[in-house]
Length: 239
Length: 220
Image (cartoon, rainbow over all chains, first blue to last red; front, side, top):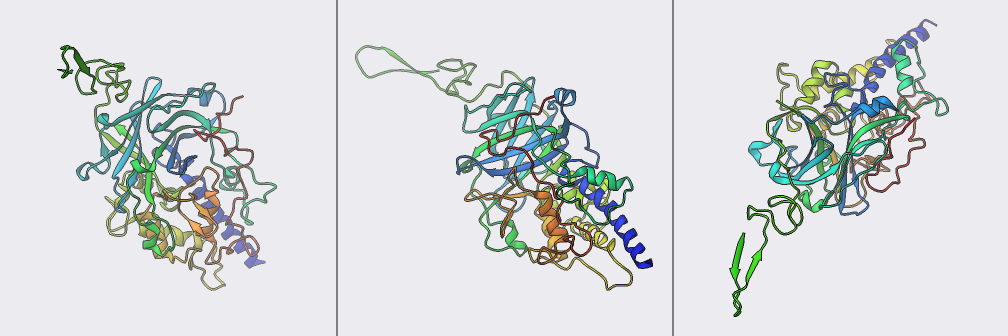
């Protein structure tokens, strides 16, 4: 019995810790200084488009947004530069970027544009000479997309695609011990099922991103993987 | 504007509209923009320097493995190429992100430890990575690897890290790498807590839509 109690307590501690870790997973609920700010990145997705020679890049921001007034009042910050960073050499430095920045009710896009070595890193200018498109920011009721250039473009509120049982972990963090771990499938609940996010979506022809390098995982014991770009998103605030 | 006389006998002038002639002509909607030229800036100001405040590659790497707000902030403010074991974290002595991640991972496992039983450790994950290789991989290559040729997914069958689809259950994948052990069944709920899946799927979301692929926002 003593042992059992011990295990129970250890499990409780573990789960409390696990809660903290999972609450912050996927950056959905940021536990750091950017939480609930307009630079806060919720998630990043990258996948093959409907045309197989295109890649779709999706960044979600400021999520999760409750349905109703919270979603209605959320907006892209015109002081924040949203960037997709593409490494096509395997050194994890951005060789090509696609930038998005709001002015009034329009999202302007720059690139894909090459970033030379001396301009790689944490500080950036908007690559105005590489203006490549613009799209009216969508609203709750109106969808605007741009297909005027080589890029397909979208910016605006959408349903949050992220799914995760966060309530389970909130209750555990508040001291409810759950040594058995996660709920059963019947009891698990998706915290994000009724939430929105702000999203920026770019569909880009792969040939504008350069040639993909050897897959990064090959340096860490992974085998038989196709060549792959290394892509991340960042938000940068005007100084 | 560039103009010239052609070589016939009528002295007529041919206008050649270009996107660099400094005037609005042809189909342009502004000076050298719109129409056949690139879009117009419309006098908007995009000047200034912009400094990184948040960054995200793979889902949750920073916040799963960075144990406090100071380290999370340091991670968000670091360049992706400066997160290997060769790059000390600014202002944190000799600590590197892989070393911090190793500590976090070890602490997760320590919570399970029954003092009367042999020590349990990370061992290896389903990718065959030990703790050193795994944490280096997490920190030093924190981006989505995206394959331009062929299918893209975070994890599908035996293939990992060729992209991230909207439908991918990345939380289960993250948990599997952390708690699944070498064969993916460790901490599966049969023996001890169930930690390798949150048991939530995408529910009634529709991931089969055309561009922009995401569903319309929910409304009351």
